[in-house]
Length: 189
Image 1: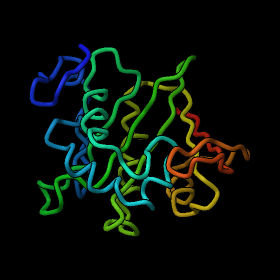
Image 2: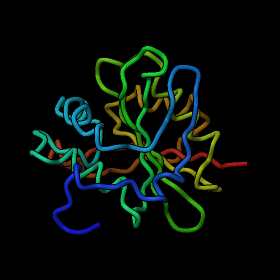
Image 3: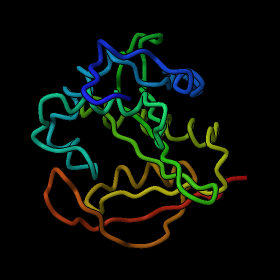
Image 4: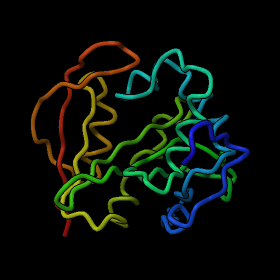
């Protein structure tokens, strides 16, 4: 991806096209596309969403969501990001995102966030479960981490077969601090 690339200049590369679309009962998981940037900016501008992640800043700087979409569509990316798209089921086109980051040794790290208006709907559990079952990276082990003040996300992981591995801490950009975490693991078939 060349420096200074803008979303309207972006053409979808074949690797993004090969990222699988995953269907669930209430939505599809699909690769991000340039039109998602606005809703990503809208949802992640919410302090509660940003503070639930390691990497989303608050306040969200101009262009941050566009840069995120560009990175997610890059040929040399190490993270696959899916939009949780409910438009085919009379829901919002973007409900949140779920991602898998490739790690060494056939391992991947799972991440997710849901727009605050869709919390406590089961969307996060349904999206995570669908990615786990599809196992698009053919990983033998999946890892995930949640902040200890976010028990709802911990429940999502345990509901999807993840097992508590231990306590740690991670930097939160939005909080500008190290935050205690719970780490989870899921051994795959």
